[in-house]
Image (cartoon, rainbow over all chains, first blue to last red; front, side):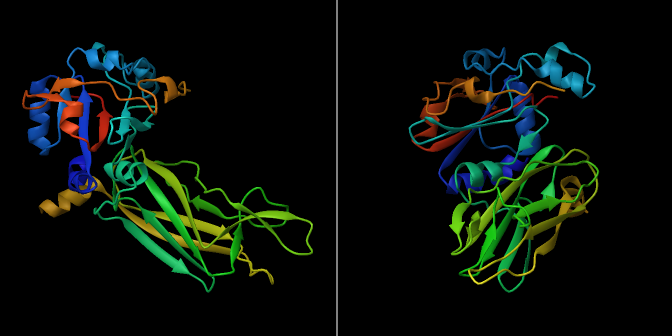
Length: 270
Length: 52
């Protein structure tokens, strides 16, 4: 599984990994053997620990109903899906939970976004540039799995003295924006922008907020259909300016290829 | 539309010491989470069944 593949990177970053479910030891033993899992899969049969920690999933039937899955007793007892990130003292650094157990984060996202570590697994990366701005798009994995959340990161490197606008922005100016063209079965979350900083130009009444040097924008993507290799069409819009004036507005198109994970494994087996 | 769950107050809060947990692993050995962590940072992942 994906977390197992990330295990060496977690170890290098000094992060221990534990998974807890309500399964019996026998079920976990079979799962670990089938998938070659070496980190501890802990058995909370009866969901006592899950209850004690206040993580008993009261919404599981509601979510099943939304997916058209009939109510079954065995679903009752699962925890809310997600992860606690602990520091060296065992304190909770961060809680990364999902609304529904179908959605999953990758180990790469937990390691890189949560702990600031570095994964060695392949990413999908493309880059384009004009004279003032280099734009790089990186998808945290070169392949996707059904309902796994993948972070797309857009990194702009601006030449010295150059800025692009953030939001809010006066009418007539073009703020930095990132759009992913719709694909059937792709859910695109809201982009997360870093806070821009105020900028004032001599002789102008209007105030602006801008970005300079390096800007990193992240957005979560979830593929809700299985099957085909895809290409993400990402458009990054901005207007680069210096104190002297502005360049024409730009729309940089980046095409990020992403493979369907099962097909990758299948073709490797051949 | 599903209820949106606010996880702030579900389970241990940010800044809390994560409670002691000791459970059997896939080999049937009891794993004490904090002891096994041995001063390392950790991810404690909660997931649905591995059986379905």
